[in-house]
Length: 70
Image 1: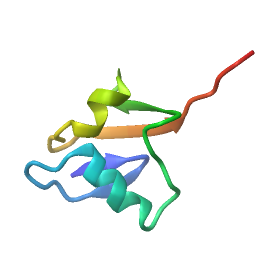
Image 2: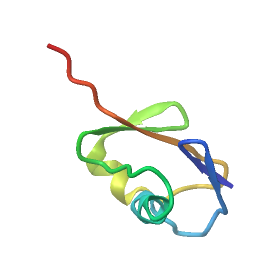
Image 3: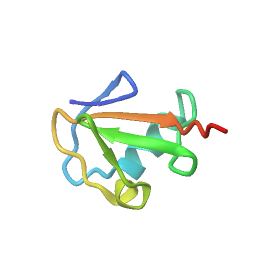
Image 4: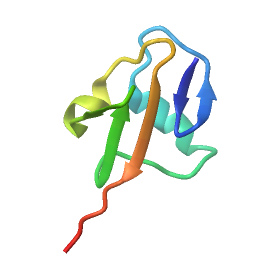
């Protein structure tokens, strides 16, 4: 099981985060990589690395909008 922003998905071998995001965006609130922060299992991941990251069973992913202060 993989969780993305609280939504559960079945684990699939060699499934990348980019693939999961495309599937998630078909039904749920749209998330992406540009302008968002990616957190996998409690660790912030660089956006360039996150897109191609292959997910593991029981991964928990949060993709949240980046808030720029001023």
